[in-house]
Image (cartoon, rainbow, N blue to C red; front, side, top):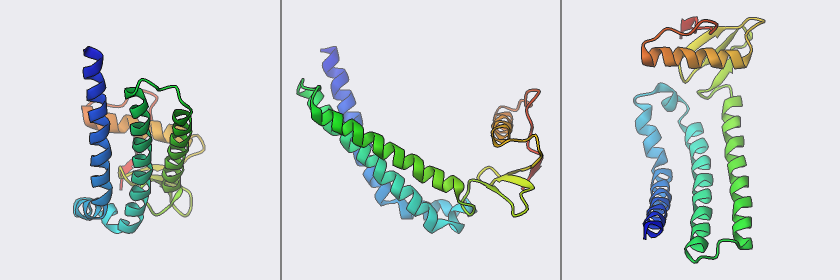
Length: 171
């Protein structure tokens, strides 16, 4: 009986996530427009962000669709079938495409992401609003660590630990 309750809960959760994801993806243009009133980057890059989130949303919906299909075979007590292997392969492809879309956003200079100035002297994290002066010893990894430490310090009220590079100035 306990397995049946867990199975029904998991099925219900997958169904909820699938249909809620459809609703979020369909209402994405309106949601981004409304959020643009609070965050100027979303207003400035409205079209780019809607396209980015729509592509990622559709791919995420395809992953949930495959999971629902796989779950049907689990409910039928026949989960070791070739169709599930194909579904797993497709989900891997969709996940990789989501990663590519996200990497494309990170590489784009005009979207809220990691971006450097024209002279290459500062590395900005526009979404957080911090600017870090570039030096020979500051690798992108150390910059991200410093920003993460700074963000944790701001959220917890604690100062960054020794060895971390705090953000030097606010944009």
